[in-house]
Figure 1 (cartoon, rainbow, N blue to C red):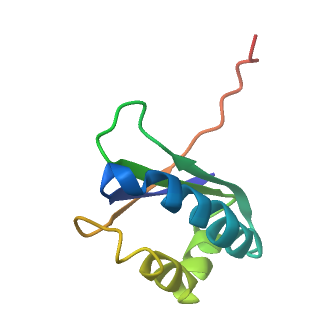
Figure 2: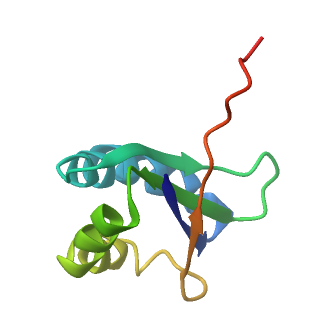
Length: 102
């Protein structure tokens, strides 16, 4: 599995608007791509204004196909007026746990 995290800094007062946009515009667009497993927006439990967009993919090749399509850039740009700093994308290899959840 492969994970992509985009760290986004916004004004905390914009969290509700960004969350709504994310769920109505970003999630459906990303779900159109082959290999996507999860599309999540992580919101802080305090009011620091940092959000994290997390997508998980079956493979790096499928995540790269999404990014190379230009869709990632187009979707990030939808929020550019809300950013207080440039978004940071980080990628990770992710291991699924074989330990059962209790």
